[in-house]
Image 1 (cartoon, rainbow, N blue to C red):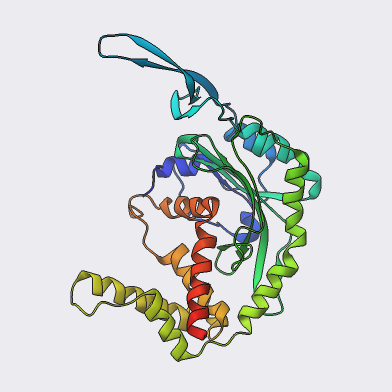
Image 2: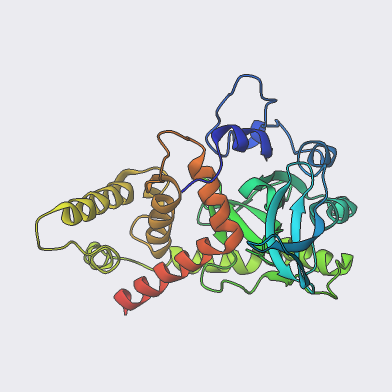
Length: 338
């Protein structure tokens, strides 16, 4: 369920590299709002001007009893956005704020010499969650014809929902699908820093994370090659569908929904240009389910807020849901092939 309005998403989510890749997400023009799409990379100065122009603050936590007595909680504090007076959360005193300006903008800007470009950045949940996505200037194409863009996704939160994380992701260009590195080894390419009292941003930690963009392509290419060279017969594909999307025998809405999903997956596998080139292989199966999940599967309230899918996909990438889902697909497929 989208927590943001279309106006919010079009004002506080910035999308770069449009001239090269097109609009990565559904683009909605709203009168009175400054355009949020950039032909080239998003300038770092724009991040400060449009997104990270405020700093979160700590506030004392006071409780008012029914009789009017005021009590100050000395062990806990509130994290507040000063310009909107929004309370992001209540934490123990040891919780350390990781402000966006320092952790996602100022220190990341120092790494500009790595020649990584900013392709996406934004705020969600009223400003409680933020990210900056950096990518290499050029895409990579494997011998199997899979073109992708390596990314580093830098994210953190002010409401305790996610730790500060620098994670490797890949975007397959033909469908704009996001994959965590690597699809079968989720979590191996992350630097995660908790919001502890003694945490501090170390530039070298971030440099190590960004260096993964260059170090991990060979590993990802090898995994793509293995998946593309693993044959999946029509019978195995049908068995896979039965495992991930069983159709109830009893008539009713549940059976209709399951059958519709089965038909859409089958149609994509057989004829969708984003999937068909790899049909009959393990990569084709993963690509089909990933494309369906990210771009075809229904999103609550999307008819009223066309940007709800963008928000959902971004949250999944930040929280690691994408990698978890891909791993589950691979595990199921491996069991079928065995």
